[in-house]
Length: 151
Image 1 (spheres, helix red, strand yellow):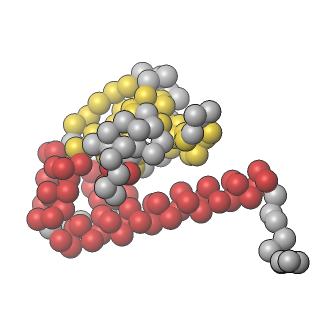
Image 2 (spheres, one colour):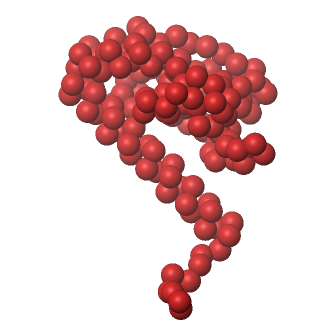
């Protein structure tokens, strides 16, 4: 997996993609390890290269999403001015990721406003899809309520 193939960076200039790639470092984590836990400082964006990561929220670890596609982003809350991660990311299998420090990425994107727009539009789409999937899972779990009001 290279940066240009990752969803969030597709469509950016080659020069910007190369700068992001230079800022990224590859890391490996064993099965059972955590990339981060809820509340940890949200300082990094991760791009999955291989493996499976379970994102969970809450004290009981309710599953929000399993990320398993190369190029998927993990830790997007680091890019939306959250101080801490809003979920925990546990490796279900051995995992390889590209780890990008948020301040470095923001500096790169600020120097390429067109690339920054592409990145944040794609990030908004990613967040929207995950939110929609979350709603669908909630409706599936609890059943759809009758939208009519009898009050």
